[in-house]
Image (cartoon, rainbow, N blue to C red):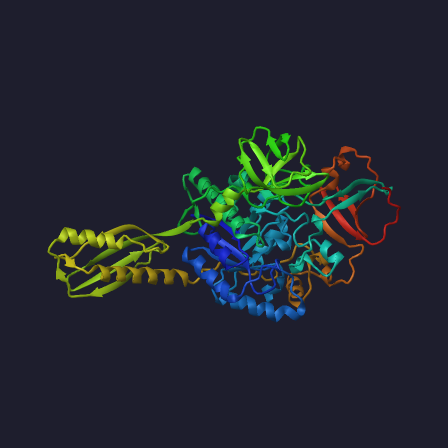
Length: 615
């Protein structure tokens, strides 16, 4: 059977449990250090507990150690990685190739998207160089993903939902060019979400004060079947800094989609990678929690309307335009959404995103707390649905494991056997002697009723079989309940402590890297990463850009997102917009270059403008 994995993010232990309960087959989270979200670290004690909870359901826990590692940090990185593996972490998600040269025991390595895994050649190499799984670059078309899947036998993991990094992953130095904060160190200042002016070659400002690099979020809900057909194994949700409500909602949404996709195929050769039944007491909806009105980015091909120039914030779901204003009340045009007191709304006013909450709704008349900026025709968005938020905060969503119990023996001793998804029965005994039941049928009924209770555990008793050798013994209710609880506790402990069966890929000695020379964008900042490339035939290895004191003149971003295309001035369409184009934010300047053959845009840091700005 081919196993499909829904991989959810978790910023902490509580969120990890929520993700598993909502249907995740695996969770990825940061450890004490060296993860690409510096604000989402966790102690090894919490990692241990997250591992145990995941393994209870046959799910997995991956540790993100996906920053570059400086020379003086190598020993710390090795110690954390080995400690996590010893705790039962199923795999390490890494960017720095130093981890391949640390001598880690029993390490399954996943190549982070931060390695910029964007070509069949690169992915094919990594799959033969010690990585059991490759996480693809987010800025790929479906056709590019398909070709990459054909090029390797390694597992392929794809982001299906969440924020998009406008740059190629691990190839963005924009934050580092402005300060000490580096995206490759988990400290990105997100300059792509800032406002910029766009100047043409004469210095004329052609776009002013807009979020020109802020792209919308990713949502591949409509492409799950295509990804399955390509051979994708793991379906990844972005969001290690997102709150628990987001994780519950989005995980539950894709849990349903994956189950439906398997059902459409009749379950033939497909199954989920973990076990248990998820019971939701809310209806998931991606528009109800943080989203920048996502789409499929460039999955279906490169095209305009990928960015959100007005705001980088989550606007939520559009609920309608203002048809009337009556004093401090508004009336919307016909809308399918039902607004309620306590909901949060937002709208654009004078080029600025404004927000307020609703005080009351009566007979279609909506009284917001603040009405300033709202005019007839204003499009209103709901960015906080109080009823939905309440349902998430009060959710009793549970994930249960099927369990079959068998009770047998005689009046001298009893045995109770339980078997769950791992098909390894666990058996306990209860010594007698016991009296013979004077009313056998009543005694049998009582025993079955006692054994059918799960006692609030994660187990759901699906079947109870009771059969004795001869006479039916009379067993005190307290004794049989105690035996059942002991068995459930023993079974839970065994599942939690299950030793992971890691998919450890071997490294092919002498395998040549696709390039003989690698530049600073390969992020080599330590001796062990340098040794990896040398071992695979690379002859020239430039120092990683993060080691440079100044990035002036350096290509700080390469992206499939093209600003020319976005504003309707594609060079292939005959645009006469004068080159070169420049992004301006305060004193900072970034020159834009365009590779029409590869359909990519480059962003180069320049220090001093050589022209006079024309406002």
